[in-house]
Length: 371
Image (tube, rainbow, N blue to C red; front, side, top):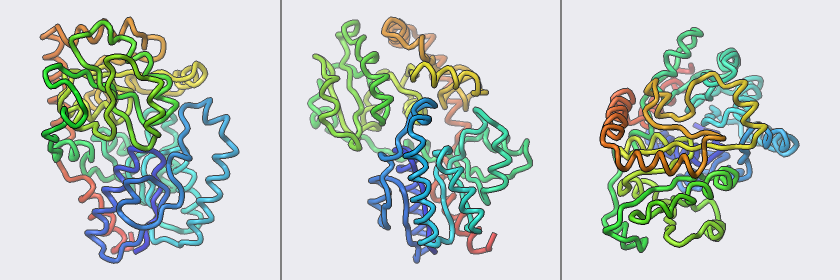
């Protein structure tokens, strides 16, 4: 069968690559064409456009990129029509992918969605569009099943791929040596994100507190989809950088400063105490405050249904608050114990399911049945 996939950011590239691998295991004749990234490309098939071209962060930034966005939509639509896939598989990235779902449905192309748009967070009315345009939805967060049930739309929960990846990970024995880290100095992991816009907003503040923690080494998780030279203007004495070794870094970390996103869930699953951080433009934040319907921004707190980790958002994201919160994480045993207990609840809710494999089995099954 012919599969066309669209992943618009780094985490989607990772999850789509795993799904492609499992789809090939279920369908020996699988052919892939996609918008995605390096990890998908490593699985074979043909990359049409890299997700770096699509990176837009925040409402204001999206508004100023309308013409480019429309151009990409038209290019993608034309490419799908030329390829004539058996199914279009959309991976997260709602702003672009919901438009592509509508287009594909109009062309009578089957639409599967892997990793639901976060419509439970804002604009819940879009559930009707999901029901109209998406043939099958495959969710990765347990509470999403209950959310969609309220709208009489059955979805498949096959587990959480991040939980599976963390459970399968084996730490690298020579991590310190390979990265020239001090073996006897505890690590504060700094995860500023994977897009330039968010890194610019987050990283300077995160590393500003280093002088207050001289007994620790601050290690920044860099990503290889950005030029390593880009990180040079963040260099300070005592700051170290590692690239594409986030899991290794978390497996050795004592605590972490994490930009809101999938990384907050990864950090929790590694059992690392964390502070969740987020800041965007003033206008984007003001719009977000008006439309977002959930009490938290981190996946950890959303899945738990309560505050497990501290969220420092917008005006609260300051070096002073970071410093105070990190000191509490490192010195208050009761605070740490409460967070660890929350992490245990989180793991139980997510379970272990081999999410990519089970999702691939479901997808191939539905396609074979003609559903």
